[in-house]
Length: 239
Image (cartoon, rainbow, N blue to C red):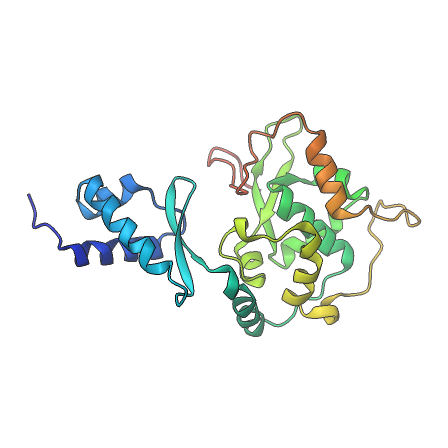
């Protein structure tokens, strides 16, 4: 049996692992990594979580999806967004592009037909624009007739909006203002462009109302969709 860690060493090792991980780290994974019993790891985790819970800390460790992960504290989100915004030149997006991005962000993973059903217009060109600007990415294919491509938000989207996790997304009503702030205020809104296949005289429905109406009309969620916006399993095909 190897040399056991001191309590300070164990806490430090757990902190480093959780910080380095992209996804929430489970108790079992942590215990295996440090070679300690789960009871000892759980006790050290409780102390670590408590040490980050004090007001002076800018980040915290939350238990989410069965594991532990670092998050920025809500009271500092505005500061983080301003910092991220300063690192990247503003993107110019049309309002249809912002509306499409909002639908994908809150419904992800979502297919083009699903987005079009909510928005009420053809959005193939807008989706291509969002792909080119790296705000969305493909997430396999949905297991339905025709196997349409699934889309989800990207790491670039998370960085642009100063988010560490999709759980930090604001309400749909707040999304438009957040988008203006993240993409360069009103100057980041390019003139609206005609979307191929859309009726020029038809106004797109309110995004938040359309998404909420769509969700309430579904009898059960798709097997590919989760509350955290998880990407489908690796068995799905990539575009």
